Length: 455
Image (cartoon, rainbow, N blue to C red; front, top):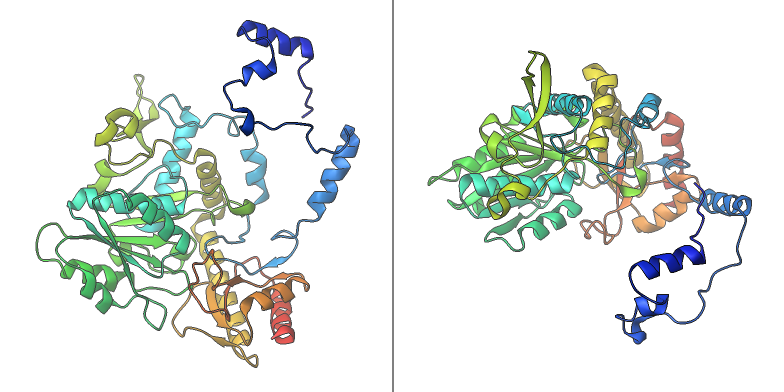
């Protein structure tokens, strides 16, 4: 899109309309010490052609998941996305400047959200789902709020194996609430021991939040964790079990619902959403029927219009902050409409068999690669438990050095667990590696060779 600046005459017309003589007079309210003086340090003006060439050079310097084999994960995964999704989502009916979240949303959008809710409910094995949330971390925080509001209790137990980004958002949400966040210590085998939950649970416990696969890629025992916390409470409402899930893993492993979860929250990025520099992403939220009237976000229901035709509408909105104000159970007042539509298209295109095939490829490729890396001199698997498509490797030298060296081989080798973003969850020699269906045998061979060379 071309940009043409306004003319001096147009600028003066606007100043005259508001009764100001000059630009300087317009900004008189800003102290002179806070205003920039002099000329901007900018290069000479360029033609459109010159600018396009300059931007192409800058774009060509990028080296990411599209130009290197990506073994990075830690919450964001490189999955196959059918090409038709980008083609359809770019249509003017969907890609608009306006988020279709209010009651006047078109029947097409409402039906898509309704189908999305149905798909997520089936994927998680729970009764109901909302029309999406901002992203996974927000969905987990809202699950904690629902538990506090539903039980009337004030303590939230959260597994120390939760992704650190999610933990940060959860702490922020609860910072000003009359509630206490209890982080459960991680056992030596990288998961949460039921005995630890029993030790920290009391009659004021509202819920326990457990992620599986967890931040180390390990599979937690949801069923035992949720059963333990409920058995530990003898007075008042039973605490809720909150499962933080990976939607692809749900196609292969037991679902949150099958493990006794009351609420399931997760990140929907693996469902047809590109890695796209870290966002925006898509929050997933589902729960048992009994929490229908306390759920956050948008819910779309099926009804009939005046002519008896099938129709869709937003329902149960009275709990929202824009209507109930301080009495609302959530301040979420919209949903990720465009990305929920992408996820709906993706799940519809792949189908149950397709998503399971993706999950099986992730499982088998990850286990094959883990076995080969563990056989390299100086390398070993940090944890011995079952994992889905992500695992931690102990390297013979700092993981940061391994990662930097692998870049020269055209590989994104993984995530350093000792870095700031990962909240120093592991030692400096611990490397988190993720394998999806996108990784080929040649790429895995190249990673093994690179680790051997640089170890």
